[in-house]
Amino acid sequence: MKSFLRFVSRNRLYTVIEVAGMAIALAFIIFVGTYVTQERGYDTFVGDDVYVGSDAELFSLSGTVKGAVEGRYPDIEAVCRTVGTMSVNGWDLSVSVGDRTMVQNALCVDSNFLSLIPLPMAAGDRKGALEAVGSVIVSQSFANTYFPGGNAVGNGIDITAGDGKTTLTITGVFEDMERTVLPGCDMISTAWICWRGSCLI
Image (cartoon, rainbow, N blue to C red; front, side, top):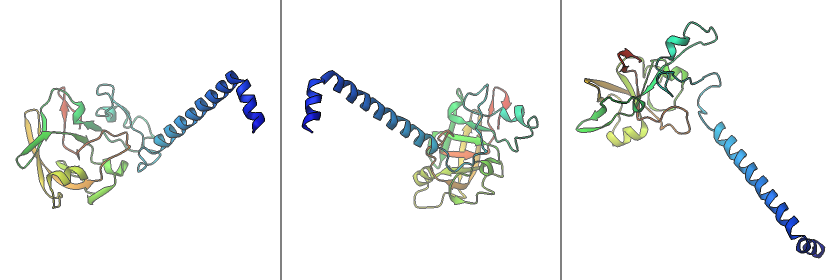
């Protein structure tokens, strides 16, 4: 030990370089390990054969992808479009529950969404939850906030999109989405969203 301390005191520059190098290497190992762990923790409920594509017109969404790929590539077994209302600008998109109105944070999807993306459900039947147009599943935090002490399933919520207004029926409650590539949302519905004169969902 004495000889080591003597060596360190006589070779200070060498010691600083060695310690700094080890600190940088250790920091890099921690960074890479954390990054890999986080990346492998995303969408753990989704199978390895499910891919998320983006749209040329609506970045980070896939509203018009279905028409571009369906039937052209035999390896693609099913396609589901997704349009996040928070990414559609220039529209009055709101949701009303009773006398409370807030900005609509929804993900509009095709009816096969839950068969491709098996979101963990807190209430409702997964198989039929999004089969009918006008059905909606809401997040657990949304249900707890706007339907406290009761079951949200079976209740109606009013949505406004531009000049149109419709009532959706809550058919399920999904667990809050965390660590996913999907846009964070309060509700997922099969309601149609039109943009620039063409219906995307």
